Length: 72
Image 1: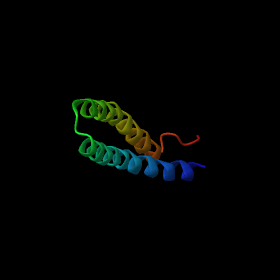
Image 2: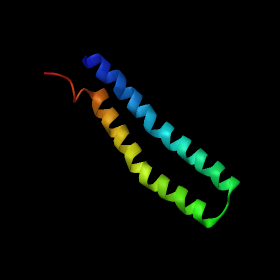
Image 3: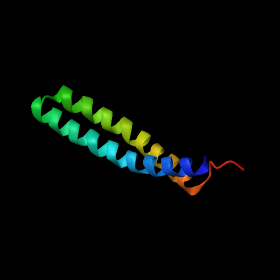
Image 4: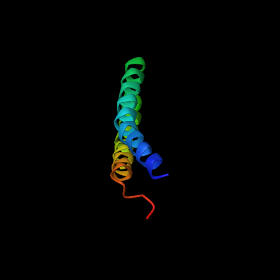
């Protein structure tokens, strides 16, 4: 079970930056489609709120990879 937790730690570490890159790419394409202020504000809020969530996922993955959640 501890081995699975470490594998998921790697997954969480990779998922954080990938999700942020995907969000920024989606925001750029949506803003390009409809470049009004409302759209820019909406996507800016989405990005600003999601970045700390992604950092938290990466921290969780780091600790899982490190073995902090192993059964003792």
